[in-house]
Each structure stands twice: as C-alpha cells, then as structure tokens.
Length: 242
Image (cartoon, rainbow, N blue to C red; front, side, top):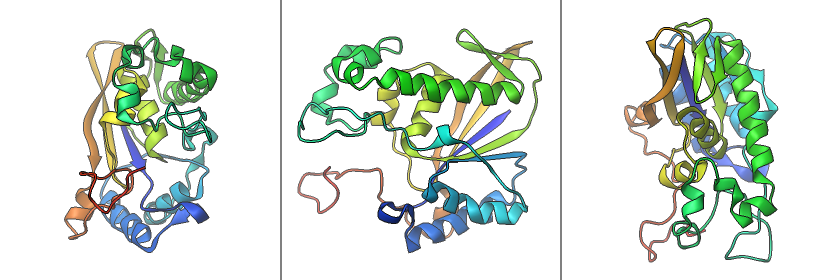
C-alpha cells in the first residue's frame, strides 16, 4: 500500500482557507496528482485542507471522506518560555527541548512535565488509534511495532491534512518520538510525503518513508515553495522568528 500525506497549501489562517498563492499551489498539485492512480481520499475537516483537496478531487470526480482526527494536532501546553498563554504542543524553542533526553524517547516523550500537564498523550493516542483503524480497514492491522498484512495490496491512499498531525502519523508508522519529526523536518505547503509498505516476510508489514515533503509540482512550474512552516535562517533575516 502507498500512503500520500499531503500538507495543505499556503494557508490563510484567519479565514481557515488558502491565500491566492495557496490556491495556485493546490491547482499545481492537482495537475500532477491527476496522473497518479489514487484509490481512496481522506481529508481534515479544516477549511485549508479541504480547499487544498478540492482541485484534485475535481480532477478525479471524487469526494473525500472527512476525518475529524486529521485536523491539525493541538493539545495546548504552557510552553517553557511563555507563561502568558498556551501554545500548540509541538512548537517549542530548540533551547527548551533539545537538552531534554526524555523528549527523544519514543516511549516516554509524553511524560515530560510540560507534555504531561497538557495531557498530550491522550490526544496522541486518540489520533494514532483512529489512524490504525483506518489502516486496518485497508488491510493492515497494528500488531506490536509492525502491521499484520491481512489483505496486502497496492492501493494508494491520499490524506489531505496538516504539518503537525502529519508528523504524528509518521511517528506512529516508523516508531519515533514525534518531537524529533516536528522539529527535525519541514514540509512546505502543498508538499506530498509518500510512505510505502514493505512486506519482507509474508504477513508482516512495516512502513517506510520513500519521499518526504515533495514539491516537484511547484518546481516544475517555476514556483518557489511558500515559506510557511519555516523560521528565519539567520536572526537578522526579515522572516518569521516565532
């Protein structure tokens, strides 16, 4: 099976939709995806993800199944550097988390006092539990750290969602702390991450990331990927700091 995790295009967060650039990115994406064989479509209920999916679904003449658990991952926390308001749990300053070994531990990252106070594990378990149910419906049932290939197949499943929740799903598939992915990867708006099953022994499947954050649909059109999801390269840059 092949999974396509598709991040929404350049967002208009205020209106939960897309900027003019984002709509163009979504059209570029559809132009590329229409040449693929995609068997199943799922989408976050949030407007920016649904708007990103819209041109692709039009090309295929299909509708997507709306999944509430594909909405952006939040689970608000009191971030160590800011006691004035709660933040999404995956946006920490590097100096506040990279020296905390527990946050790198796939089995204990949620025990960190900040994560525990925000009850982040409950939301992580809810999302990954629903994800496992979806995979089981498509023939792959979670069994320990692997997936039992009950009905192995070559289907392609597209999920239009968000950066934070995309990292949560990948962390479940490959068995790492999501903090490593949230802070170590950057997926540009409208990018496509491809994950494949590998069944090296009959009945036992694992998932492997084949391509991460592919924006070739933009590059071949001569478009630069949007900056959203990144922070400034240098402090003096006139780009996003926080």
